[in-house]
Length: 167
Image 1 (spheres, one colour):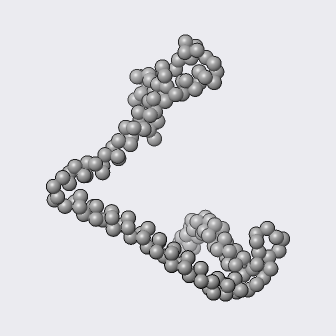
Image 2 (cartoon, one colour; image 1 turned 180 degrees about the horizontal axis):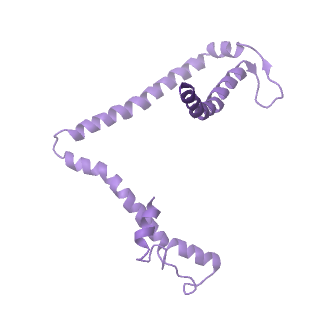
Image 3 (tube, rainbow, N blue to C red; image 1 turned 30 degrees about the vertical axis):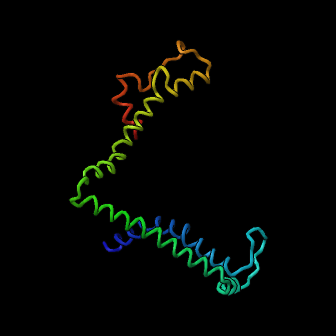
């Protein structure tokens, strides 16, 4: 029984470990190998220089300036939205006058998004002046009498097609 369980453990782990090895480990080791060479990416054979590239980068003052700037931006990009979001959540959760209005204002885009998307799809599929019918008429040079299709405009089709268009 134990060997059968081990077989399935290895069988189920084989695919994700293979993907990780091919798309993460191999490029990582390949990048390290290329960092030990003097190669522009186009020549036939890279020239091995050892740790010379690392010596050059760690003696360059611009590298440390770039490292400090990157650390500042990274810290700000993590701290400002997190602290701002927590402060806003605390403010909206407190018993402040007008908190319900602010809660409604922040929740409104979530509710309106599906309504706006649905309205846009209705305008696209509208049978008389919808964008899809006009494009088909223009492409085929058909007159409105020759081509009139109620995509979402047909009331009988709306209960089925409207929710599918929103997905």
